Length: 473
Ligand code: FAD
Ligand code: NAI
Image (cartoon, rainbow, N blue to C red; front, side, top):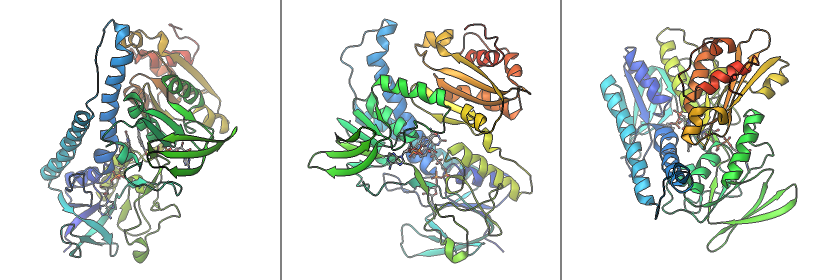
């Protein structure tokens, strides 16, 4: 008899959600994970809870308060004197949030009777997994199950010119734990991590320069939104240099000199700490994939079909280690869907409706197609844009930058994409996702009553604007 019905490898938002859903569906489930946290303890939650989504948002919130106190409170008639940072306390708060959430996952495992197995897992066949005991290196245990879900996630890709040293040259994990605010922070890559972590340290006082190889700022974001965001971030003081190809990274005794080339020629900049944020790569090298014949592509991603099935019978793969966006909610959705498929159900995931959020200030959020993608596909569409400047709640909040942009099919009026740069875009985008899941038209949103005064009225007005009848602009 098999030890388990399902073994999940990896306990990030893909793996732990898959394991809980499997248990809910009545499967005897184990989840193997090799994460060791800063204290040297095993912890559930993977990248997202330990060194990703959660700690970064905790620091974004703290740093935003500090920035607002210095730059925004005066507009409210509130005078602040002698405000300073206690970075150790800020980090302690962040660590506490992480600990409460990772501990919460272990309670969810206990409640759902998911067996947590600590250690590194590798495949011995399509039904046998070998786990190495982290406390007794060399001691190995074999477990079998009819179904295996691989959810081993990803790690920072890094660049050859500047290998991580954990001190001065760091990845996002290092940049979440600096023990003092760097005077000058260099970041390679103006993507999501570069912008979020750059925002944190810039707000806390680091002179921050971001070098990005490509000219196209946030190339997957709707151009109008990306252009507005770039202008705003530069106004805030983030020094974003586009088309900057890194040529040399020279370590000096107490600084790092970055030599790069852009359209104007060769230039250099001195920094104290360097964050490399040039993308992430899948964690699949140590799975024993070749030996068991599991197909992995040239970039290290496990090959799967639309339903997350690998080429091996009974083995599925989900989350950051397979194709598609590297996002926690995408991983979790795939985890639930795979569990339900094993149970004989027929869930579907529509990758065109995965929301994206960049937690800058203001935030950027989007779902569906951009104007550029629609033009490339030759699709005729209507555009409705509404600026937060004309929204009462935004003015009351003191956050009136940005806009909502809604794109709808010219013939059917179906909403094809919604793009937001503005306050709480992360929360506002949910309405657009639900509308698109229900194949709503712009007219459906235009005829939906939105409470006043709320930020969501901007989405309502953008829907009206798609038909040329916005009221407040
Ligand atoms: P992971 O979370 O990476 O988990 C994989 C787990 O598997 C890890 O615990 C790993 O140790 C374990 N593992 C790997 N190999 C083995 C093995 N052989 N045996 C046993 N265990 C193994 N996404 C968002 O949606 N929103 C955000 O705000 C956000 N912010 C982020 C901020 C940062 C700084 C970073 C780095 C990422 C962020 N992400 C965010 C991305 C998000 O963290 C990932 O998309 C998500 O964690 C992927 O989930 P996963 O379950 O596929 O993998
Ligand atoms: P990214 O793919 O978002 O951005 C990488 C950037 O680096 C790009 O702009 C690219 O042009 C640039 N770049 C690549 N190589 C370079 C080089 N050699 N020199 C200079 N620039 C270079 O990757 P990032 O920021 O590392 O994040 C990885 C992934 O993690 C994200 O794509 C996202 O999936 C996930 N994530 C999600 C978050 C969220 O949902 N809010 C937050 C943080 C990460």
